[in-house]
Length: 530
Image 1 (cartoon, helix red, strand yellow):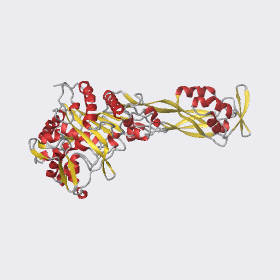
Image 2: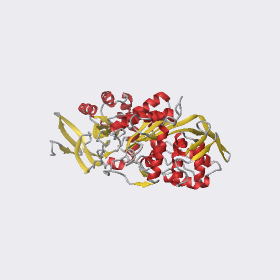
Image 3: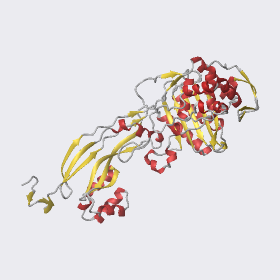
Image 4: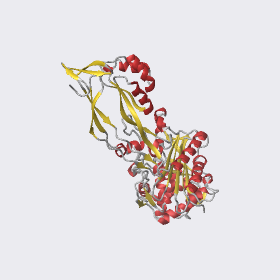
């Protein structure tokens, strides 16, 4: 006599169930089932949950145990959200010993399937990833696959910490599919929770503003980065168009990309600050140094035209404020190719910033040996090399931070500030701050970026996009990078808009977006007006 009133006879198991004698083959099934570890939560700097794991269930079938596949399919297909015909084809295939019917099923629907008590249909505990804020920071957070492994974004980059380690349980079933024993052979270990430097309120504001830019200018894409230049904390990393993190599959692949780290572009005039920084630090120029600026300048076989007006006598400060192409090229020629290249790399261009995100581009910075005769007519004005928005934000943070370049930080690690390296002197940084304030003046290129009550420093960029054989006359990248207060900055905002339609300059497209983000961010962060 066996436990439960069962007896073993001639290789068959006879058991009373519901008053009926049922014959069961003594052969048992043994299945090793994965017990998924609970994935860690991702939250913003204030503890607001951005990515969580919620209980779910996996529904499976042992087809050869299902007596009436048609009836079973009719009952469970609506709860699985699958066509009845597709479910029936699985259940009717009695050659299969195991088949998944549904993964990551909502617990309520799973409970309804369980209550049907259909022999051969089983459920396993599972979990699924849920993003409570929908589209907020979705390109940063990334996605998780059906096996709870990260596929993109932070979910992929930090997968080893977030995922933990799965457990395993051994299920022994009798020939009718009923469990007779369950043993945990390996315990699971929950993943680690991650707290980001992102501030949800600032992230939402940046995404809202980019949405307005997208509606007005219908660009190919846009991104905005909000940083604390003192410690490198990324307070917002926004992309347009928005993508619902809970329905990523509905968005085209190009919309899912994080342009802040993966989009490479020729920066145009925003790069002139780097050219001037090198010349100031090498003591080749001062803010008051004057240059005679003509309507154009020729370097080898390249003719570079003045961006605004026909020229005149410009100080270095005016060259930066009015974004003079000819003036920037002249300063670059004073530096020379080797020194110019050294300053470009000193500011971090040509290498990744090492934010914990997959797919970060290093940009493209040519080697001096590969320069052509006209390269020094292109590079000082931000043409002939490619950068990423995060690289530009980091470089400008060095100017805003008194000459110290701090690596951008996306994950809180308990430190009050990150360790940085000095790239220019404090004096040079202060001089640049003063010159960049002029960009927002009445004769500068970005009066639209001004924020009432605050001194703002920044620079516009309007870069023609490279095409086969030269540069497009109709496709541009509009950008603006600014920080506030201009002295002792605590906020930096970089905005980049790819191929805006209609207006296309940095001053017209990106600078107003900066103003709308900064107008919210400054009082929100408790930064008092002057």
